Length: 484
Image (cartoon, rainbow, N blue to C red):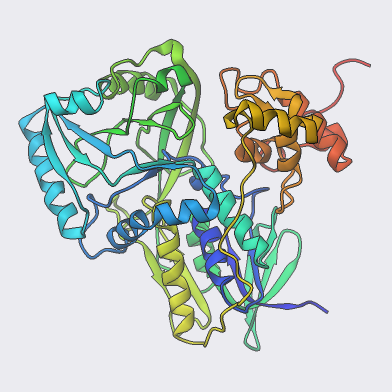
């Protein structure tokens, strides 16, 4: 006999994982359905990794509220979840009188939203703060910061799992029906029963919303392409450098340091209809180089080690590209459903505030009993390369796997990879290990270590080489032997 969940969450991006963690504070049976093989495979893992201050969003909007709220609490969150985070500040640069008008407009908007410390600075101060930045003047947003979106999403999901939440990967939802007060959620693998459904499906949120009987929403896919630069470029930049926003609050190409020392150049912005189109295109990449050099003066082509793209699910007015605010709703005519649509930037910054608003809608209908065993803390995988020589020696003496370097570019040991392979979510893909340890993220982008990682997965999980996948369903690392 199937067990019935109290809450079933569709989608395990950063917001879905945050919702799972927030619900695990209470005595509930909670499940998460994810169509991919891991968390953060789509929008949550394909972005700039910036903790936004909240100065480009309409005052009173959910975007503004969640950005400012999420920004203010992130030191505590990063400490609880063992997530690397730097409150670097952000420079929004300008060149023209029109740019100055834009900066003054968004400074006033930010202050109305409760963003603290916004300041217009001249070129001298700009260069003192970051000599790599272009621009004649800038707005400084000191509360902005940078984080690793992979690590953060994984941490939220792992903490939810440690507090009793069940995750089901490779479980794309294909049908939802309600019978006798219980939802039957059919996936490509099984059928799950639940009293409540939370739609946090990101790019597929309108599809799930329609299945639940809430129609009328339209998502627009806004694709952004990026360059990732080598760590030697990261030595020149101290904080994100953005161009002055356009009249709608959007940004063109910007330069962003990562918490791991690289630099991101991008994103571009292109309206697309195919939400699976993660390709990159030469004309767009050429424009990124040209625009990126305006933001980040030391930008050199030889520093590029990877290109990639992400897609943001913007809620739009049908037939237009006019974007709307986040939707976080509960409707009486569709009982026991919490529907989230159009959650994109600043979804990374506002994930936990969004989760708290989701749980608050549940509380309007049912009493929640606190889970006295809830533990908000999660410990990440030890980073061997950051340890002192004394600690490294102790680790190797206790476990010789720490003495074997698998990823030479990032100096990641077999000990770290083994810990990642045995992660509590049960993820077995190469990118799953990558997102937990940084293997394959260096200059060679896995040219040296990918086959070794695959071999470790084979050995530890008793899998055939042909069964190991890179990232998504069907992305097999090997199709067969090159020779016998």
